[in-house]
Length: 271
Image: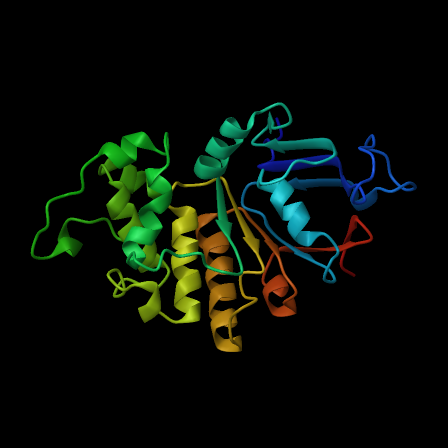
């Protein structure tokens, strides 16, 4: 039996009415409505790494927002892990975003008063967010935490078996993204590339089924962009992270397993 895709879009349409115009049924073309997405059908399998490219204003961020339940399509279906999201209310969608979807944006949105470790832990504070992990106390401090904490390269199941707390997982993720020595640094003490690495760790703290990245290298210099692109590709390659990236960066797109272009409201393979 075929494995259920992590994400499915079926004939997704998104259109906006002109200011002051009537609310129209979900049809394409004509009238005052402007169609941004025109019948998008897409399947993303577990472990896939997909880049979506396209010109500015083509609807890439709109499409990503619909994938991440930040926006609703005008018509069509969106399924996450086989679950149809169409009839869920805002509270249910917020819970899914927190538990099953990780986000990385062009701007890191880190809390300036919090350390890197505290920023990574923020998603665990939401109501219902992995309560079993959040409620479990962290291990007492010892002289050498490395002797009591699982290694970053151990399988996730090993951490679960050892009763990994939310704080332990946050520390491990920061180590995984190369910031093990920056746990207590605040955003003002970190570089732009380091900000985005913290954002990646934060996006992964609740073990999401899907990571969505919207222009994650857009505000970085070339060296930091290359480093972040390699990190995302490595997480996909070594840990099976399912990843969808929208980007203008040809270098980032090239590191993904698949590349599609969004143009005139439709997706097509890049030749």
